[in-house]
Amino acid sequence: MSGFTIRAATAADAQTIAALNFACWRETYESLLPADVFAALTLEERLDHWRGVFQTGGGCVALTEDADGAAAGFTHWRAHELVLGGRLGRGGEICAIYLRRVAQGRGLGRNLMWLMAQEMRESGLHWASLTVLRDNGAARSFYEAMGARRFGRELSWRGVPQVAYGWRDVGGLARAATV
Ligand SMILES: CC(C)(COP(=O)(O)OP(=O)(O)OC[C@H]1O[C@@H](n2cnc3c(N)ncnc32)[C@H](O)[C@@H]1OP(=O)(O)O)[C@@H](O)C(=O)NCCC(=O)NCCS
Image 1 (tube, rainbow, N blue to C red):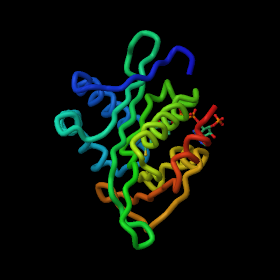
Image 2: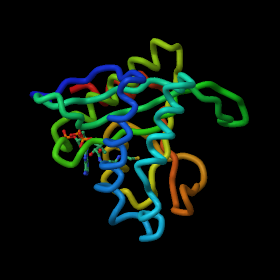
Image 3: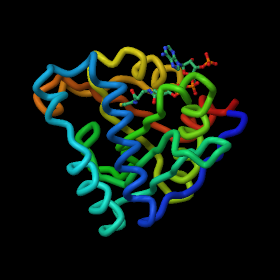
Image 4: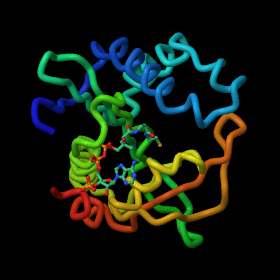
């Protein structure tokens, strides 16, 4: 990840992250979403979302910047509760991990996963989960390379099939993400 840095994001970054999120969605989802769902993605909705995240303290957000300080990627996770095996437990939900296309395939995703695993461990959380579009094969391969296992039934995001992945132990995620 030479030339890139990762830092914690703050409310002052909400607009930057919204624009980055929108740009990443457009790069990632043009070939994965039905045209009407893709056309309905807006920068305004992302701005509302990110202002809400920072106003409510809704989790940990990290921002990756290139050597010129341009935003290249971000992650967002939060603590959440889930019934697993009939028991209610608390874990970390990876809400988002996105890199601009130009920043992909350089090990940044691995570094970001490692960082989230450390933060979850420090928060006393033992397991982690996320959802991903069923047909986003590249992201699913990345999660599987990070040790994630598929669980649960098929879900849906804006009417598009989604699947869930998880780690029983965020220590395993940290180990898989270690360079
Ligand atoms: C998915 C994403 C976060 C991965 O980050 P990345 O920096 O590109 O991935 P890394 O370079 O850290 O790859 C780590 C490992 O994951 C695996 N991997 C990554 N991308 C892969 C791909 N497209 N196909 C198969 N395996 C892949 C490899 O095992 C890789 O290890 P290696 O380079 O030693 O072989 C990034 O590519 C991205 O933002 N994609 C578009 C947005 C997206 O789909 N986000 C997820 C939404 S749920």
